Image (cartoon, rainbow, N blue to C red):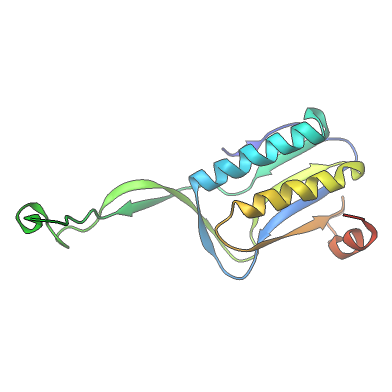
Length: 151
């Protein structure tokens, strides 16, 4: 799940999706859905060798659930809140405010497709997010690029 997907192209503009408002937890299946969707979209529209995509967070937090017995005679075989630690049901990544979730490196001519991929990734997240555009030096050029671009 973690690591570079493809080689970095030559002259690139960096796109980063960052979390907005407050920290949350992203489930492992949401991160996997983002990875599949963004890769498929960029491979189809940009080509395999013209982008690099990296997921920056890793799901390490174990999610647990305490199954409660309901129905008739549940009091005979249910434990209620005795030993309520629960069974593991999945993994999640802890995300802080303004933490980078994923990064896409593309050439300047593929800018529109990278924005489309970021929009698709935002739809898979359980909360609102925003993206930032950085140049090679790391300067934030989001407003400058979006004002000159026709979407």
